Image 1 (cartoon, chains in turn blue, yellow):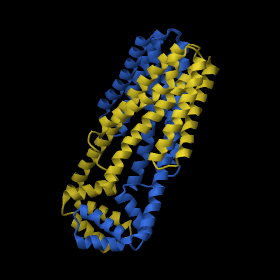
Image 2: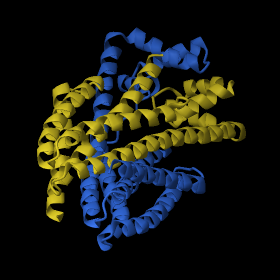
Image 3: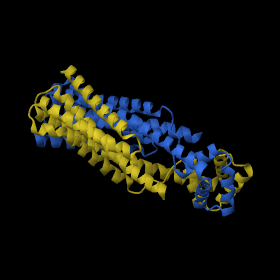
Image 4: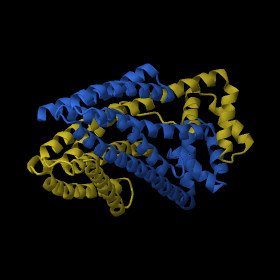
Amino acid sequence: MHQEKHLRSSDTIRDIVIGMSDGLTVPFALAAGLSGAVTSSTLVVTAGIAEIVAGSIAMGLGGFLAGRTEVDHYNAELKREYDEVERVPDQEKAEVKEVFADFGLSEALQQQIADEMARDKDKWVDFMMRFELGLEEPVANRATQSAITIGVSYIAGGIIPLSPYFFIENSQIALYYSCILTLICLFVFGYFKSKVTGQKPFTGAVKVVIIGALAAAAAFIVAKIIT
Amino acid sequence: MHQEKHLRSSDTIRDIVIGMSDGLTVPFALAAGLSGAVTSSTLVVTAGIAEIVAGSIAMGLGGFLAGRTEVDHYNAELKREYDEVERVPDQEKAEVKEVFADFGLSEALQQQIADEMARDKDKWVDFMMRFELGLEEPVANRATQSAITIGVSYIAGGIIPLSPYFFIENSQIALYYSCILTLICLFVFGYFKSKVTGQKPFTGAVKVVIIGALAAAAAFIVAKIIT
């Protein structure tokens, strides 16, 4: 019970973190890069919004497909285990024993466990899935939820670095406000993200800010060199 | 042995898939969106390269931090389990029994397992980590390798949709070639990705192409509306 709750909440948080950290970082860096190359904010806004649309769809659907792949993989392995339990029960019993041999249980106890386990095929297969293959049953509808969470988080993150460009026509000046605003948001985001994932909040926040600043600086410099 | 190999290869493949599918899709969609708004390929190239730089850094470092977080989380839980085994051994034994109660083993056998398990603390803790918490020990240096794999895959993927803009000055015409080239590459990429992850190759390839086309079309339409 504890474990399931733990897994579910960390899955959603992981999705928000994935979507928002990229959403804050990539449109920010793109806007910074373009500000180094063009003076009109209109163009930065156009490119930024095109990026947010593209990124949220790609990441959201990417998350969706990743979730679906996980479900498909689980079901394929489940079918195989049921098949093996039916066809080669002795080999599967030996595999159960092997799991417990690794944990230093005696041969006699291993045999007893394997024999008792084999009485209920569903539970036996469930055991093999979790303990031999290390596969947890994926949460139903996780894929759709994951897609929406990642996509929306990406949009929410991406609007922030772009917002100064909506109001300030000169892209150089807009960049200045975008940097201040985004780096503050990255710090706050990094702080809470680290708190939630059990890391040191301040160190985590600094790391997130550095990544964002690094990506923006790199994009700015590269764009300057090209043009 | 089989399991570890399976896990490692699928981790690297997952990283390549993450990096390349976003690399092919997002710069493609961004270039398509900008082609709907400006006629000069130079600007599309500048924005595209800025995006690739930003995206590869954000995704690569994102992958690195995700890997690091996994290691930190594992170590924190490991410490807690060692502590609990020392402080409240009876409670931990009850948790071992609970795991096996779920698989329908008899009370007597549960007790025997818990008693034998408790003889070796390292193995006991290892058991709790894997079977109660569902945590595998993360592979060392996985984070760095993951960062590089995702970053390079993103760059490799991103260069493809941008390449026609290097040679064709009119962005509308370049977009035409970019669409053909990228959709073919998305199909080939999706085909092999699906094969490797054990999905139906053709269906998988079509899905990947649809995501790319959808993201590009959405970015193109949104950019047209804004300008």
